[in-house]
Image (cartoon, rainbow over all chains, first blue to last red; front, side, top):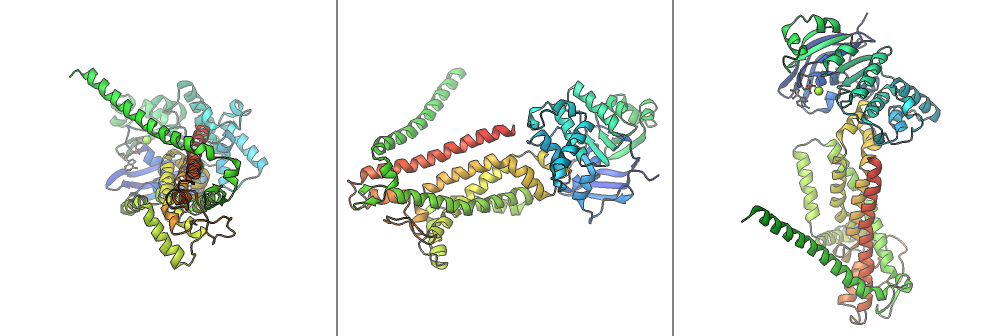
Length: 251
Length: 282
Ligand SMILES: Nc1ncnc2c1ncn2[C@@H]1O[C@H](COP(=O)(O)OP(=O)(O)O)[C@@H](O)[C@H]1O
Ligand SMILES: [Mg+2]
């Protein structure tokens, strides 16, 4: 079986700073992979490789192969806008547009040229249901997205990403700005989403990684130190540095 | 000296100075209103000047100023917004951007009489527009350009990058992101800048002096190649070189009141729009 996503000898430089050092990674479809490691080790950078958001950063240079469904996306001639329609991203801080709830979810669809009201309504409802937000907002779709709670906003951002039916979803610490109740809602959601999507999630929360992910990758100063089944990583890490990190001996 | 006492003295001083600014503004307003209010009437606002501009109304000057403001904005708004979008959304930080910034702020510092002279040389003479609405509007538009560019750039800068990233992340192109996310969010502040520059432009005399303003023209223009009267120039004329300065004094104050009202209305509208639209984005 071809893995859903794969990197081969991935090197990334921010100018002279070598931020990712030869990452060989692969994840199968319909799995959740957690990326853990201390701040600044390159988790977000790694995540942004899969939708080429690093392109927006001046002086960022990426070498090696990044494969999605077997196709190398680290190619100068790739249409990145098309790529980003297939790879959804959820950011650390909820960032809904200052538009209505409906228009937030419909945004990606409109970008794709879908403007027919009936189709939009169907797809928005479907995405909001997938993001477990429908029941809470179905009577207020015209309300500003800025008026709902932070936890709801983050699920709205997830719905916005899901509406364009990506196959891969990248989440960069999606719960770090949320309260515990919202966090557990989002976690539950992630668990359900893997039926349809492949998910990469960066998290600082070890329990969260253990709860939601099938596999876990431990990063340290630009290297992927250990990558294995989540249960293995948390109960039986092979490398001392991983063990030190997950037991909280360094930060 | 005791720290608290010196704090007190300084804050009292600052408060007095702020108060003085308010007093100056209200004295000017009060003076103009006191002297001008008696001249204001329906007749004054809607009639042509008569009797060597010592009697009658200022209708053509009001219309002229409105036309010039509109004309200058039709030019300065799209050009200024486009330049600001280019500078803020496309050009990377670096020498090119610094150079463009420097040029914009230099343009803002050029005295308005120099704009007038330039407008006369380019639009009136070189391009053969003659003294005309089009020449005056373009000259005023050039004057307003740096204001529009700067306020639009400020407005765009205030748009949080997270919105741009969200849009790009959904597969939107840069242009789609600007059109559907960045500009709508920045819109209230851009409009504020526009209205403030309307206030500025409507009061300028020097740029229209050699490019469009008519000394006395008791009729409305028929095309953009006609001359018009304008409030600030009319005020200047009847206050300094009219046929009978003393007799036209009430008209001068009335004109000043109309002019200052336009500027104030622009400023107040700007802050209302900013507050109302700004809240909607919260
Ligand atoms: N835009 C950038 N420009 C230059 N260096 C960056 C940039 N973003 C991140 N870095 C550097 O790359 C390294 C990895 O950062 P990041 O991927 O954000 O780490 P993490 O998400 O694991 O905290 C850090 O040393 C950081 O300083
Ligand atoms: Mg990070």
